[in-house]
Amino acid sequence: MTTPPAAHPGAPGGQPALTAAQVHHRSTSGRLVLAHPWTAHVALAALVLLLGSVTAAAASETVRGATSLGLFAPGSPADARFTTAWLAGTAAGALALLARNRWPLAVTAVLTVLAVLSLALGQVLGVLGFCLAWALHAVAARCSARTAWVAGTAVLVVVSLAVFRWQVVGLAEVLLWSDELPPGDGPVFQRLTEPGFSAGRRTWTVLLLLALLVLGGVSGAGSRARRLHARDVAERYAAMARERDASAALARAAERARIAREVHDVVAHSVSVMVALSDGALSALDRAPEASRSALAELSRTGRGALADMRSVLGPLHPDEGADGAEAGDGGPAAPAGTDLVAVVERFRTTGLSLSASGLDVPLPPDAAVRLAVVRIVTEALTNVLRHAPGTPGAAVALRRTGSAVEVEVVDAGGTRPGTGAGTRRGIAGVRERAALLGGRAEAGPVDGGGWRVHVVIPVEEPAGGSAGEATP
Image 1 (cartoon, rainbow, N blue to C red):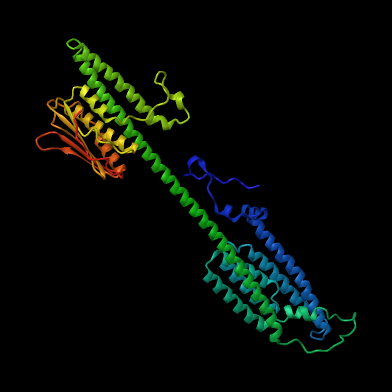
Image 2: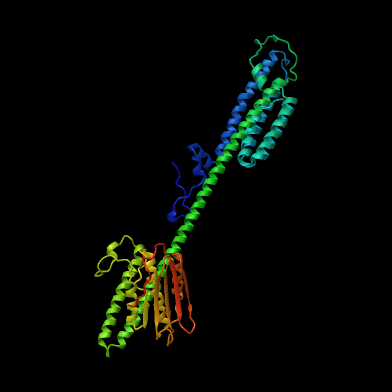
């Protein structure tokens, strides 16, 4: 059973993170070793002790066979010396291997010294060559390839020199002499000289040691490569998760900015118009009841339009509500925000603003984003005229269309009374943001002689449907 991965702290919704252990796809035994590393040490030590015991018995049989050949005198202490050195090397090697993962180079050096001592004092290498292979495996698994090559070469050279100098019982002797047993307790049936130096027999031991060291180094390098690959995959996954989280955070921030901009446009603009309409209706209530009723009707239409716009803006935040989220009596789901520029201009005229307009009949591009941006920009500019230039003798809206752009310009002559407030400065920032999102530019600032000018250019791809005629509705 695979343990479920821990949740990535930066993942949205607590999505699981990929770990290096999961990339390995370990078996049950591998997961057990990963959870309890001491089990691998104990198992290896037990294997070394078992192998040492079996091969020590084989070495003892080799001495008996060599004695039957007359290479050793009957009753010679060679058997005890070889067996003792073999078993002592086995125990020391098993003990040293317990620390191979923590100190691989130090353990390799200790085992090399033990091998030289075993050869110098006992004239046997025993299972210390097997132990050196496991030590080199740990070096290759935890150190660089260069370090592993240097360590393996040093071990091979030092131990080979010791083998050629002192070894008496090795792999070749076990294979050649272990079956030569004396017939009962009688005299030896051959009388050979005492075993001397034999380069051929010692070469067998060196070749076996070389094979063990190569096997240990290659398997350790493979283990290190798999571990580094798993870590690299996990790091790349974590980097992708961080990039995904950063992208999601940027998207959320952009969406919050969009909603804030839309809410500001809907609320601030509509409320400014509604306040102006209610003030006009209140002042004309007694002297011009018809004008007052018209202002109140426009006030109602503006409020309903603001509600529809708010549902359009906030609707994506509650996609499951559908038509149920609409208020009763509104006629069902919210419709997209209106893009009727003529209606916008007429609404501001109803507030009493002296307003002239040109180019409102110019066909706008079919792109809803461009059409909505034009309406929002004009609405923002005229709202600023109401709030910051009350009593202005005149304001002008001009819309022009070329083959590559739509231009919007709103200019006022300056107010004759103090403005209603300092403002939040979000409106002009919103105009610039809208233009920038569509690849355009916006300029806003005072004009010579008083007043304020807003000029926006939005690029479009469609060719102009004709010359931008000018008409004053």
